[in-house]
Image 1 (cartoon, rainbow, N blue to C red):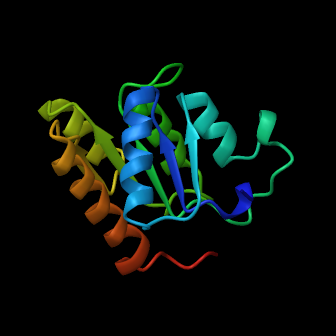
Image 2: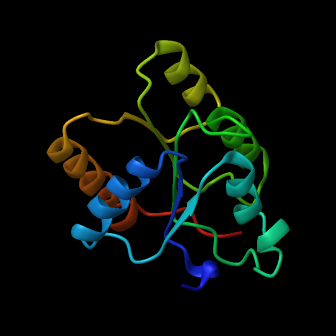
Length: 148
């Protein structure tokens, strides 16, 4: 996969949830290019082409970022803050995909500029359908902001 043409950046540390999300995405043929970051630092290194990703260029950011709140090294909220503070990533859609239904987590996410907040369904079929609808909307129906 060419890392410069990633459609989805999935930021998730739970291997079983990564597998479930990837299965749902691939079974619905919604996204072609998915990159998984297992913690907040890796996600930002990938986005900003630093560390092990320093050989990449910033010419094609992901079309969408699926971000979990409870990830190691930096929380999802901290990652979101960095994404929104940088003009290169400010308009990239970020969907908080988390198990938290806490009002404070939701409020903090929206205050920091998340585009959508979705609680992960427990039921496999509901989870799969949620991922299908989420990616259909953000990758096919939604018009992304033009690159400056």
